[in-house]
Structure formats: C-alpha cells, structure tokens
Image (cartoon, rainbow, N blue to C red; front, side, top):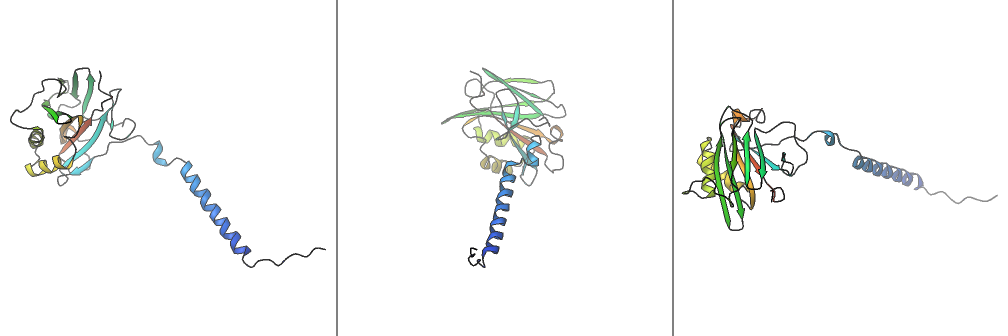
Length: 215
C-alpha cells in the first residue's frame, strides 16, 4: 500500500480563492458580451442647458441620405426636429415643421482664414429657403458685422442677453472650420424638445460633413 504524503494546510483556502476568482472572471466576461438594456433603445436628442438654463443647445449632423442625427451618434431619433434640411450641388435647402413662430438661422462656412455667413428666417411651415453656400455664393449678411458679431446679434433677436450671447459664442465651436447651419427655435417651435426645462430658446447646430456635400 502506497503512503500518501502530508496534506497542505493551505489547500482548502487556496482552492476557495481560485474558485472565487474564476466566478468573478466569468461574470466579467458575461457582462461584456451581453447587450445592455440601453442597446435596444432608439436614439434620442440630447439638450444642454446654458445661460442660466434659459437656452438649450442641441448638436446634430446631416447624413448623406439627408437625415438629421445626433452629432457623434448613430440612428435617427423618433422625435423630429422643428426644422428640415437637404443639400444640392449649389444650395442648402431649409424648411420648418412649425408655423407658430419665426425660426432665425445662420449659415456659416470656414476654410482656413476665409469665412462667410448668411442670415435668414423661416416664418411659415410651407416655407422653403434655397440658400447659397456661404463661401461659394452670395449669402445675405450684415456687412457691418463680422461672423462673431452676427451670431451674437442673431441670438439677441430671440431674447438672449448680450452677455449670455457673448459667453455662448466663446464657449462653443460654432465658428470653427467647416460648414454648419445654426437655427434659433423659440419655445413655441420646440416645445416638445424643451418639455420639462425652463429654456425659452433651442439653438440647433447642424454640422454638414465635407463628405455629405454634393459635388
């Protein structure tokens, strides 16, 4: 009969530790592989409150297929924005879904040291504005105001104070390189998106990536 060697006093605790480590690793792997509950939820618009919560900011992007999606996100939210947009080779075409109030807007384009803007207004639901690309066409602007001053003035038209307008323009990259349209939607025009907030104005920034613009 063979004789068994002495059993280690630490074998039991060590096996227990190994078992617990294995359980933890399995749990981590399972949590990484299993989809979270949020994965199946539709995308939603996100608004950021500023200017003592009187102004809400919403960032969007125009896709190649002409849809508006959250900037940096994927998928089209079920809740529509109060504005419409599409592009053709020589124009930006904008419209509104509401008729309660005027939506002021500003087209802006910067390439290196060159920049240009245009200012417009959408007053009726059936309105369709065919707007020049700022650097390629002849946009309507205020000759006595540069782009920064024009944007501050545009915000002021919708009740934003001069001090808050200045802070908003300085804080956001609305005048950075690229092409975009900024819409000022008053509360009546964006009440569904502003529901539950004290904001009186929704600033919708729509980025137009270079690959989206028709040649």
